[in-house]
Length: 455
Image 1: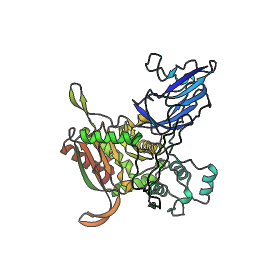
Image 2: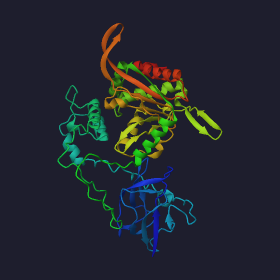
Image 3: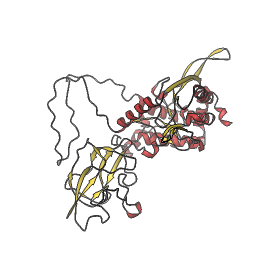
Image 4: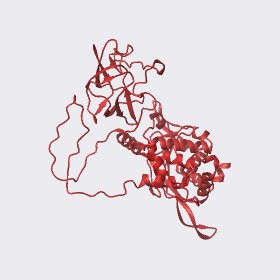
């Protein structure tokens, strides 16, 4: 019999530390190769760590909720000689000389340490999906076309709760999207009562039997403050934003836009058979406008680089378009790679996939790397404009405000029009005022007249 120690590995993203979210095994459990041992949360994603050997779980060396460094031992497994994996080193994650150990390939029947088999990475905050019987029961009597029903399933919308606006009483695509947006924005609309208890101790996650839980001193009465540990995505976001705000001199500009023709185009695309199975929103036209405007002002897509021989500006001739996404795990900025090469339909599909993946907590680290310019759609929260902070490694971020009907002067007459505000923040080391102003004006021009994209 031999005891092997599993250390926290670098899961391939330059990891330095991770939080132990939940143990999937307990002391005494029997595990096989590729069984999930633990779920961890890094600064980028939730990851399930699989076992590279078979045996009996010994000690859980770290409690749930603790943050540990890469290379720290987290679990021991006792394996019989005939049951242990012959390829497993004595300490998983390192060779006997302390160097990184080779990772078994999929062809060997093993998996990449830190990622597990396909489809295993899930968000611990994701609510369980309703059963097929529950979905069928809730949609009985609801009139909706198959693509609309699929859209509702993808967005987690109960069709029975959607207010139908179709001429025959059917649920439309817009109804589903509106319901999903309202559920997201207003999920915390109710103000909780203060209650009679002014302070209480919220216990940490239950520690495994082999790990003594810390003993907390009795808390005094009163509930005036709460302490939230800064870790995971919040820690990474705060560090990145501070770095960006204090290293890149931000300058912001904005302009109001008559987006009536954009709204008309969105309406036509929603009715088009070519987009029947794809979510279409003004964000799609905004994305296309940003890509178009980047071609006319490439410096907004550049990056300031501090190299060994001094600083330089790196101009990118491609667009990895980032979309700032508010998720249950915090702010993430996944990006669409080589967005400049996509057709309007392909871009719509990519944006839909990006959004759904982020909501499900399945955005991979690779999807968040190497962005060149970002869009933040603050309009979904009812905001008109803002001065966003630039994503590190980029030189520009564009904010799309809410689109609402306002009085607007057209040909000397005041008319109701769909109006929005386009704002942007830029790294003044890379781009001057004329360039950033021209860029925002170009984006506004496309929103005012999407037909310019035909050029």
